[in-house]
Image (cartoon, rainbow, N blue to C red):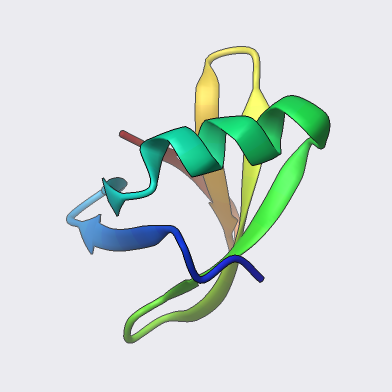
Amino acid sequence: MDSDIIIVREEMHYRVLYGHLRLAGVLSTTDEVCVDVKGEGTLKIRKTRGGMSVKKKHHQLPVL
């Protein structure tokens, strides 16, 4: 889990508040990273063709 990245949920997507470069750097070496989201626990952010997404239950929500 990477604590240098801060992500919050906004309606139907997630937004990176802090650590954009850290997140990009980690995802350049691996396909996913675990991040703690306040109020939601630990989520996996995955690198996809269309950008980054969070798989939550049966939905994939984008990360902006």
